[in-house]
Length: 569
Image (cartoon, rainbow, N blue to C red; front, side, top):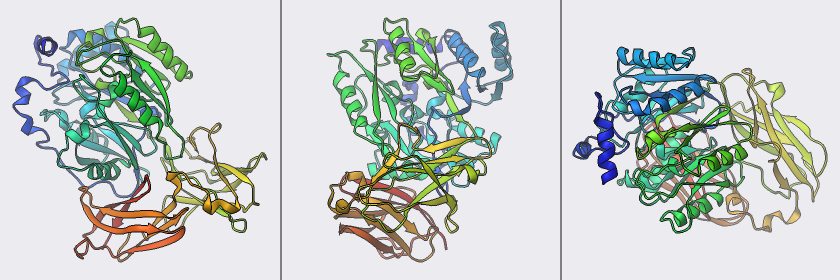
């Protein structure tokens, strides 16, 4: 309690009150105002994806309250480093504050060429928690998702809408209360959070929360882990860092610390999961200084921006170790330490006071790997959804495959006429006993290249041609090899087409945009092979469903696959 009281004094001793990471005693009396004025909208139509923080950035948002003199050097050094490689968007409260910051930066030799200012009312500096979450849409455009900020700070909660209006980007208001510090993604449809998200949305089931994360952010897999002990915020960004789509850093304390076991268990839990491309997450550990504070120092509260990593330092013995570990894990990045001792006991550091703006140049590939087969007569059809910021160069887009230890051949990927954004291609039939390895390569007219898997080599998709494929024990994630909903958009009858690699129980659920269960389409055991399961677009009481967006979950043995349905009249 002493730490909290001292921190509040620190934040309020200057002219403009700077609200802390936590709620003040006065704010606790206004908890009922959380979300007041928040605008909930329908989710975006079609497929969406939230990019990872490690992807190419257009810029970084910072909310700078200049009256915080102790934090000025931290803001200054963040701006200095980021402005060298991309834009810095600084939100200020007045023109006089902008003048003060401009003079301060110039005095310390920080160039202003890559800095833009926005004068908007705001309550606090913690833009990570209330800022915009950019995502990419099926129509090749960008959108913004706005969660309910978990503090009664209405000015902060308007910032995503102000950005969307200023940049002419659509904003989608999610009904979830979810601070950005408790949200990380791998850029391929998997998100991570602590169980704070359950605590802050007690009226929703985990399934409802998952359906909303799919609807607004495109998350097909949502990994929720226990929050750590003692620490106040419950945010995952103090003990987890997504370094790329397969590499996850998890904090580590010395044996005997109250969080020693829980962080080890969380690291093991993540390590048992796979990304959408079927590759397991690799786990790296980051030792933290021993602390029993409810606002402990953390090296994982860092910012990745293009080829740089800005790491908070605290004048601790572990500082050099932290920089060394980052450099070993990300050898192609410049690792830069920033002294954040002035923010000790504030409850956050560099990550908490910044919000990334992904590049408008991109390619996203959604592909589910082909599985083993006994077919030696028919070509192997491969499908991928490709969303891109500009036209694909079809002569540079294809499937590269090799048989056994041979050399790679290429076969084209071409648009599927009746399914916009989806491309398919065919790998020629092969002989029994052959192993086929393959990957997808795409390039667009912006000059952006992307492969699937994301790291080629060493990662390649592969499948085997074998007579006994049908009786081989398949991994749980491959019990259902393909799911197709057609037609989609749908007007009359929707058909779920499933290919089962093995007999298994299957349950198909449909939810509305509020995460409410609409109907259970199937719930029983399906045999090996192909199955078409129709849905007449009615709810569980036989009433016709209204026009709009719906979501399905197909559950089998330790397997969940999700997708979106657009119902039109």
